[in-house]
Image (tube, rainbow, N blue to C red):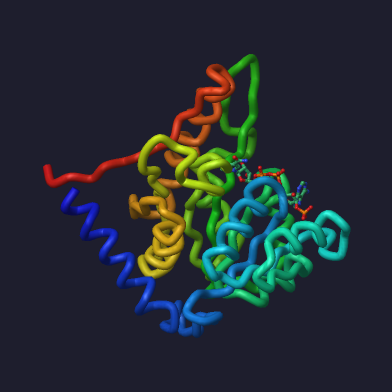
Length: 247
Ligand SMILES: NC(=O)c1ccc[n+]([C@@H]2O[C@H](COP(=O)([O-])OP(=O)(O)OC[C@H]3O[C@@H](n4cnc5c(N)ncnc54)[C@H](OP(=O)(O)O)[C@@H]3O)[C@@H](O)[C@H]2O)c1
């Protein structure tokens, strides 16, 4: 508990002190005192995070294959707070932080089409999944984790595996769970993780820096466990709360 409190205190401090600091020498853009976030992908996760973050004061620019389409116009209206939409590449260019709310199969192409992502913080909530004979497994081609593969494709960006272990309902409202919910963070850049953790804390969730990006493979396994549990026990669902302690 003590360590959790001190972690949260650190993240709160990071939120107030790093918003105008730099990642890889680039200034973080801020609206008021909160950064602009590019939300790449406008499905369940993109729209849930975009609406919630906009309500919390973050400036949201959606990235979409069809930024001018009727569905996106409705999403912008529902999001409010000055939200806008662009192509994926233009949205990424307008923000120093982006969430990749994408299907795993589309991720490589979308990232490679977004141009130079050096210095940007890329939040990765992606869970590649293949269901075979009732078994929930990683799909072919995903031997490590999406977090590690995105870090290779977007060389120079700071990938943070985050938000993949929780359900969309909890992203919309943490009270949907019956207790605290952890947002586990895996990545190789400490400042990037602190900044993503500050956003999670702002949402009423409990950020926990679990370590380097290779640990994304275990966070993706946790997500498959959550999804398999729900498929078998619907409407029951599970959420993760990891407690750190001193020995
Ligand atoms: N749903 C959950 O509860 C949940 C929870 C945690 C993590 N996740 C993970 O988060 C990621 C997004 O999940 P989601 O539920 O938001 O998925 P989704 O509803 O299918 O939305 C994905 C979005 O990605 C964009 N996209 C870009 N290229 C695409 C392509 N070739 N095919 C299809 N869509 C494409 C689309 O937005 P545009 O049409 O605007 O381009 C689409 O709306 C997934 O990897 C999922 O495993 C989901």
